[in-house]
Length: 525
Image 1 (tube, helix red, strand yellow):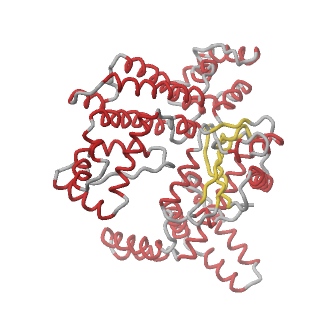
Image 2 (cartoon, rainbow, N blue to C red; image 1 turned 180 degrees about the vertical axis):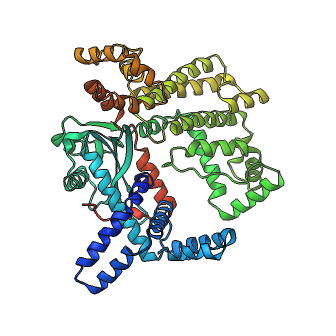
Image 3 (tube, rainbow, N blue to C red; image 1 turned 135 degrees about the vertical axis):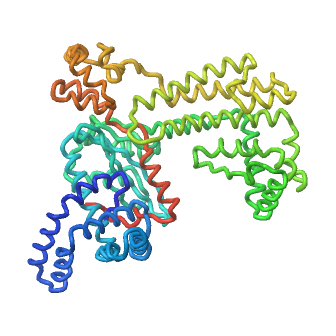
């Protein structure tokens, strides 16, 4: 059983348009069934009104997307629909809704049929051309490791992203285990490694290990495939660097928050104190090391509630209270709040659907340039780019020289880490992909491709038609017939995933829901 994500079910409309043929097929199956019980059940489904059958599939689709129990269709959705229709149009029209089959078993079967249909459609599409993979492994709420794989491929003039499969893993989850699972699924689906352009995953040794990792195994059967270390993961790793003084401030701030948040009584008393003081917030936020955006949000909230926290800690005779009377400590806290907020903004900008390596790299390069500029301004004592710190320094008398030293050391350390995780490449070599009508040459292009680019850049018909709002992938796919080799060279850059955002988003959704649809998936062979 494979339950596909919302993105994988976007073609449900096409599926429903084929319901008439499905009805005939079901009738044919019923005729050929040997079991009388099966024959009766299939015949009943085949003779359902087409509109009622279509509505049943629509509701099942919505239930699957919302990750709700299948019983909700019959227990809530159908009664609600009947009640609303009765109120709006009368009982006669509402009674027609009672023909829609929405029992628990029916909805479950509908979802299975939709998922299987979409699986077949996606596999057929992926078979027809080059594709890229994005994969990650995570442990679900039942402590079972799940390998989740997404695929990006071109279809009908644009790139599509869909879940390929999700499979439970057994054993130690080594690189060999991941490869055997992935390779076995591809063989069963009829997908060829020769068509795999790239694989994007995190930096775990089991994934990117040179000798025994998934990368080594894949390269043994697809030496042309490129591996990409998730850009979002690299950004999170680069952001972890902290010089000792600032790290002490961070750890102390986390301990303050834990002192209040980890004790239910303290949490309630702190909430009452915030209400009495008319605070805009009534609680602090927990810090989680595995959540990349956690630090910035925790420190920002602590900075906003520092007066309330100071009062609470003083009343509790906590040793942490004196830190919130130290202007230099608070100034460092304000800086950390600002810089983590900017790192969070970068992290969020790297997330999203339909991203590519070029756009993600541009955002990282822009942030690196900002870091260089901030370091220069901080050296001169200008902290305007860090708004909370700037406002605090306007109000308090702080030893700026000591503060400048800490900030400069941190900014330089951040720069070094970003250069380490994001080596500076010749990004201008790909300008011909972004601006094919103004960049007529590239050091990375062969003579043949450069000649084709010159022809394309001089083609005013294509230039005029391309002014319509087309994305880069849509443009390059649209010129594939006239400039096939040039189009392929561009798509080889645009098709690979730049991050594992889709995997992370899916895993987060499953964990938030407190259940794991992936857990119910069998190996999709």
